[in-house]
Length: 167
Image (cartoon, rainbow, N blue to C red; front, side):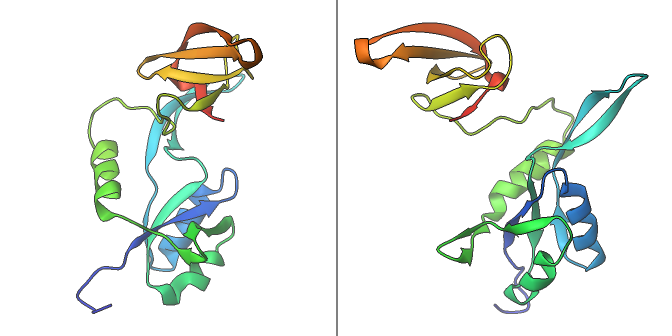
């Protein structure tokens, strides 16, 4: 790659709750890093505090040449580089630029899994926690169908979009 071109962005898969550690270590190594965060209230027994949580838990983004792959993977908490067919998969600059634009704005936003209508999802919180169904409508109030396939019957229920994840 010519010197005047920037290197591609890659997604670094991290161990649970190690995103900040990986970000700090990569910065110390002189590698460009992007860790998008969202501010949330965190509650302890004695107080509440605003904390910056990773927008995409388990991932940190870094721009580096292939020759730096070992340096990236040697960071404590780095579990791997997201790859396809054994090769690190570059992320289009436009996708991370849009994410950076969002997190730097004053807009309110929430993380959400990439789910499409028709996908099977699992409810992760609320009274239906653990239930698996098919998403029939997306939006703030998603519609979920819980079915008994053998008899061709089901029930449709509205759930909060933040309460489901891909199954």
